[in-house]
Length: 418
Ligand SMILES: Cc1cc2nc3c(=O)[nH]c(=O)nc-3n(C[C@H](O)[C@H](O)[C@H](O)COP(=O)(O)OP(=O)(O)OC[C@H]3O[C@@H](n4cnc5c(N)ncnc54)[C@H](O)[C@@H]3O)c2cc1C
Image (cartoon, rainbow, N blue to C red; front, side, top):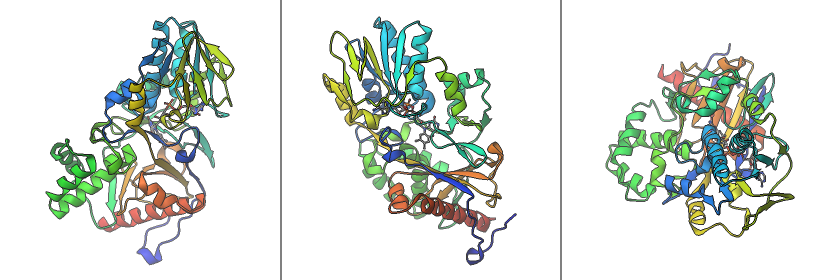
């Protein structure tokens, strides 16, 4: 086992395998997940998902005000859309997208005996859940957790199918900062949420709030924003709604799937009529029927990611309230690196959850997957403008090595605090 030394003697820990994601430049995604732009509220999510003309519903994580930006939120929303189709008396439904929302919709329709075809652009199903082999282990390069576990219908499906799940705790990170010890982050976060003037645009409200604090309090608050808001809402403060402070994310009894989301997705897709490599660019939803590519039906459920939704042609155009909702929602930028090593050289966090506070922010959140997957493996997350800073002009290998450097800096800082 390597031990840690002062900086200039540090051994170089070279990953034996790695994967770097590029969700933001993926043309079937165009970002990681939806977020509230300035002026945006959860009501815009609900409005986007309204049933239009008795024959079109937009669905997916972006339309779920209760569990946005999460897999089970997408699943629930697909089922919600399918129920609207049933209520409208649909006999043949075209579902666009075979992510969790599309699969939820199609399963519900099939259970009701309604004819349903799923058109999926990629050569695979699962959308933003995507399990890959990294060396000998399966890793998720999109979603990796079932969140809000106790109130998560998809988690109940995973249990029903016997998928192995491991409880994790995002509440107690082993945290370190590049400029010395950190504490009081949680308290600073709660104080910000209570103390900020919510009538102001978010960036201005934060700036005014910070001006009322001592330097130590302001430092903790800035790190709390990086660790609790930006890594969740995935845009810089200037591009976020004040309501982003309240959208739920990790931290509610989350469960990891050591064998990958793929196992669950395969169970959910079994028996469905899914057509792969069927990219959709236009949805005709005139009175009298819907037409998508070569398919005709009497109802359409469109579950493409918000970033793609903004590029689709609707004939007729979407009604004004839905266009307004679209303008108040945007895709956030979040990327993941998974690094695998011969040995676990970094300090162990009791919960497996690590945070690295740097100025400017870089790889803020890390999860030590070693115990769950049985090989020294970590996943790092980076969001918003930090992605451009860390990715621009670099090959995937260089990005992976820069992420490794951040992990190594975190490890040194943790050792220094001991
Ligand atoms: C890095 C990362 C980590 C995440 N971590 C978590 C986590 O741990 N837990 C969690 O709950 N959530 C997490 N999420 C969010 C979660 O992945 C999404 O909220 C969820 O998977 C969205 O499901 P969906 O069905 O709405 O959309 P998607 O899964 O994106 O499904 C949409 C489908 O539409 C297809 N499609 C796109 N364009 C077209 C087109 N033109 N024609 C036809 N089909 C098209 C896509 O290929 C895709 O299959 C994470 C996301 C990312 C990016």
